[in-house]
Image (tube, rainbow, N blue to C red; front, side, top):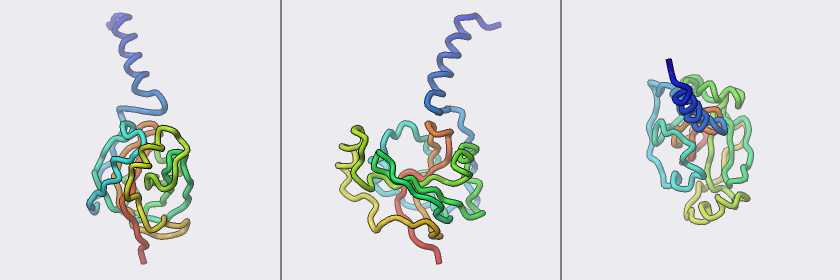
Length: 167
């Protein structure tokens, strides 16, 4: 039987790791058999609050259709992507909070509003160029595959390294 002190210590540790939706026990999805690796760019260093992201692969290429895109206060865009069937197993239960869609975040796409991100994005000499995909576009996306531990441990490509239309 555990002592009250050890039970309390275990509870404190558990609460510390579950604050803000974070979890250290995130179920890691398997890498798909047809995963196409890619080459990272330097954008990882401009990721706002990187400690919240659990790295799965440094760069992964997927295909899917853009469903929605919104600007975030940290200068990033939040792009929701319906993955093509070969990549659906990249998602976690956390992605259910985003209607079963993959989150893709190109970083430092506009001047951030959050004070913590202003200097970070100002230092980025070469943010993703060439615009962003539009809602309805069928695209390939290459980025760092991570779990966002502060958002239900959903799967993301964060940052997005490159993208293009799939014909």
